[in-house]
Length: 137
Image (cartoon, rainbow, N blue to C red; front, side):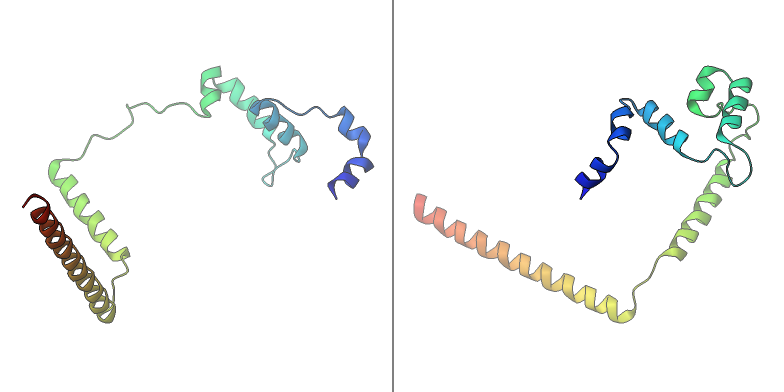
């Protein structure tokens, strides 16, 4: 099926060079997209504004790093404790708590599994103990 498409458009395939780097692929994708965005601004105008306002390093990151001058100081120990408690309460409200029936079912499953594992370990211990006693006697 794809062979038919390749045969229909051989002149496009011959002239097109496949990009070898990620930057070349991004550039090729950008050139195939429409230039204008929904808000009316284009990607080209935004790039030119970035180049005019920032250095090469800032363009690589996409935005300049914020300075610490404008940041507030850390809250006090008591403030941090209250914030922690508020966050814990808000996370506990997001939890989907099991119903009583689910809780009883899950508890029963866990107890049955624990009893089974204890019996298995007890039986293996008894068997290996008897084997060692017979072997070394």
